[in-house]
Image 1: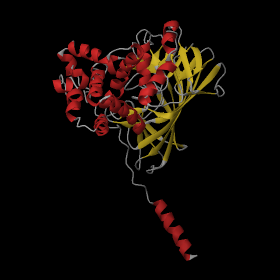
Image 2: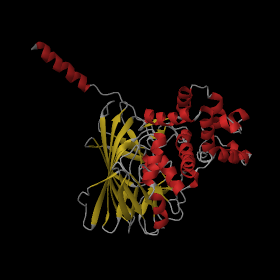
Image 3: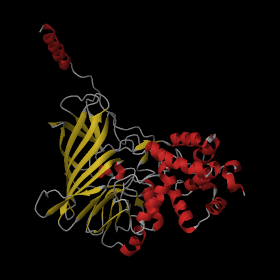
Amino acid sequence: MVIAALTVTVATVAAAVPVSANPGSPGAGDSYYPQDGNGGYDVTDYAVGIIYDPATKHLEGDTTVTAVATQNLSRFNLDLDGLTVNSVRVNGTPARFTRAGHELIVTPATPLVRGEQIKTRVGYSGEPKILADGLGGMNAGWQISPSGGAFVMGEPHSATAWYPVNDTPKDKATFHLNASVPQEWTAVSIGRELPSPPAPKPGYRTFSWAETTPTVPYLTTVAIDKFEVFRSELADGTPVIDAYAPGVDESAQQDAQSRLPEIIEFLASKFGPYPFGSAGGIFIAKPSVKYALETQGRPIYGPGMGKLTVVVHENAHQWWGNSVSFKQWRDICLSECFASYAQQLWDEAKSGKNLDDWYRSEVGKQSKDFWAAKLYDMGKGKEFTGVYKKGPLALHALRRQIGDEKFFSILRGWQTAHRNGNASWPEFEAYAARQAGQDLGGFFTAWFRQGAKPGDVHLWPGSLKS
């Protein structure tokens, strides 16, 4: 009896001692975008709810961010660009909040303890906006379509334009969306299509989507338009949803998209099993969007971008960039170099293209500026300079350096080792060298780390010498 009473007293005293807590960092420490993302917690799920009226461009949002504290937190940040925050609750209790640029700074009623689950519910509203800082000079974020609908795409930022997020590639999380729009509109997103819940107001309907494999924030999307939607399946029953906006040259886009099962089967033969539970494409009609983006499991294509070679590229990203994501933007070759080389592998397999001849031709016509582009740690704003053209040449040279058997074994093994996670370029270099049983330091320096044409020993390896 005495021992029990003493235990209760000690526990009561311990509970009364204030938690020593500190603010989470206002950035995740990316070397190019240090203020992107936040520290102090790890997100596990986004439950995003929006009501959007295309006529007024007004959005009402109700998003719950589920996370785990990685330190004792006195406060923490989320990223939300524009929009008016109306309320914040942490674990059901109202929390104080302030804004500073794209930062939403949240102070919970009591400090959070490391390891504690955090459910942050944010109510917000306003007119979402374009983010004019997309890579390669492209617009990003919330964009208005010619029909009056809207869509979200872009990198390095886009998610911050429409829901509160930890906007860093390093923090992958599952994603759930309920998007309510007027009856004549359709809302398409990533993941699997779920049964529609009740609409929040008369004249509206709700579209529900779930991506249960963790994803990077910029790989999420919503597209609202008067879509024509086609549903099919891959051979294994994986659902395929293709959505075509009004004004899209549907017949031209469908010719390529009809080969998606063949494309995914081919890519799986090179990289391992398809990593997601859904597939498809979203085809938009805004002329100023001259690119496609590998949104998870369901890439989004600008006008004219649904060509076969682009469909191959964006779906190769489902392995390279989506399932295995880079840690920092300086590692982007892990995404773009491999997706670009996948296009060459497709042509080699499907049309008999001789990649050695292609390689020799490309090497022979490149200028000094071409060789100056680095493929790793290329510098902020230069992420796309070399990865699309120099990147696939570098990977073909690596293939000839170590041989087909080891090269393709490395591609599959890397996907298995890092599936649904993140990795860096130096980690890939170390992995490739171990699996190849070669010292590849000089090769990787010559091709990926320096801004100059590789010397002959690395430029002409293996069968390329002849």
